[in-house]
Image 1 (cartoon, rainbow, N blue to C red):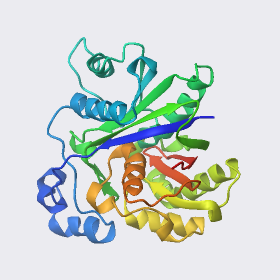
Image 2: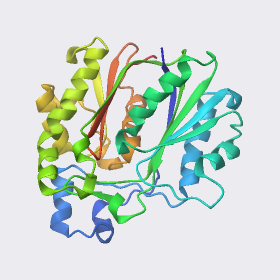
Image 3: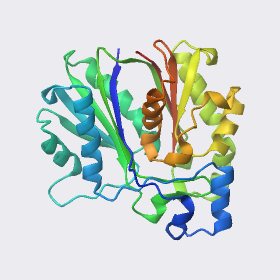
Length: 311
């Protein structure tokens, strides 16, 4: 069984107000008020260094916190939504591997499911570690910089911030047990921001029900019901859509951990594990709790994982 051994997130201290970034988004104050009052967004993390340094910092901190032997890390997987830019001849993950001394790690980049690629990577890690030595580890790092206008805003939905989170997985504990993972793809929406109007209208109308369905089916695969769930750890798209998803799922909105959304904005695929780390720091969990991680990616990809928390 796959175990999540440790989580380490990096969120920049610089978090300007949504309103101070109006030029960045090309929106008027009334438009920004919709994002603030209705969608629940307030602060936006901004990273001033390179993507290389952001990801390296997350992985470096993870290895130190979890006391992981770098030689036992056999896979370093980076999930990202945006394209990564690095110097010619030195791919991003190769540089991170070299800097951190992960000499035995194979590197893999994944992006096909956008913000939901994090869950796709967990499924891959489960298969990779199934045939590995019990002491082998896989490190998953997810991080993006919102460095282009098209990445800085999700129209009629959210604004994005800069952050990264690294996780280490093993076949055995100590750690949190992965009970189930699921990814559902509705391929007719693969045009993402460039969809036709009828495609976009269908995606928006079906979004809450599709995410609620994926969450329910993931719980079913884990042998659980909503009554067993301590928290849903969400992607931080906005409060408004989660209110609709919760209604479709038949659960109270309070079950969804949205406390950090105003402070983090939407940090792409990192959201679910950033929320895990922050809720854990607030001592929201107890040993044995069942936690549901739920996210969605542009292109109508819906994904979820169920883990059992270990003290």
